Image (cartoon, rainbow, N blue to C red):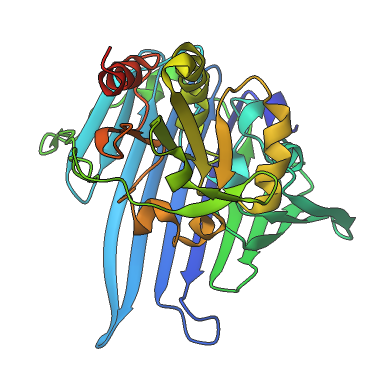
Length: 366
């Protein structure tokens, strides 16, 4: 909670990540970041970040340098991408200062306790992912937690400095294929900044970032939906073939997927509305361990869908990727009574389920 009491702050954060496909071999990738940070309430931010991504190839290490600038004042938010010489600009949101800004895990929580390390641990506990939490000598917090979307666990050590801030975070994945280290240095508490010093203009040679909508890859409309067998929440087999003759909304999701959670109430409402026309929703979890899935279901009795899980989904070998070409969740397929795909919807755009309902109506012949 020390961050919340500060009016301003400047520091340097250093982040290093080693990655390897095999814990017994030398790292295949090495990522380093050095971020110079200036914060001032209520919503003034300046980050100057240099990044290096190193990849080991046949002829040795290949280095890809880059830099990024994030500048937020009372009116405008800038994000500068040095490698591509592009910038993004939009109006700053005074109601949510700094929310979603990739600062550094050491300083998460300066503008909002929602993003603090304390709240992060609480979230792990709420989702039944917190395995252990202990306070060790020399102001070190040690905790072990599960990993959303994976069977792996993480072992983390947080070191608290004399100033009450987290100065070091070391995290190691249980299979030892990923090792992360974050270190906070050159800390200045409550420095006197002038608000105008946060004003920013991108270099003249930079150009606006162009957003590109990439077409989503799904199974072809009109093709037969592949058959499969997965598990119900009780561990019993669920066979897709048993639903032939009904209109099925096949919804791929996970408990940690924000858009999935946003879409669920609307999907459930459609399930209730068209139940008498033979419509069922099969909501297949493809991103969680079975025990987490089972713990989540009882807390959401309001959802009128049939829940199921593919245990192979968390390993990237589920029916979503093997059979249905799912590249992101939520993905929903509307399948007619004849077993043919009527529509495929990827993501959730906040339309209140309008596109899904239209597809269901088409499948029902309404």
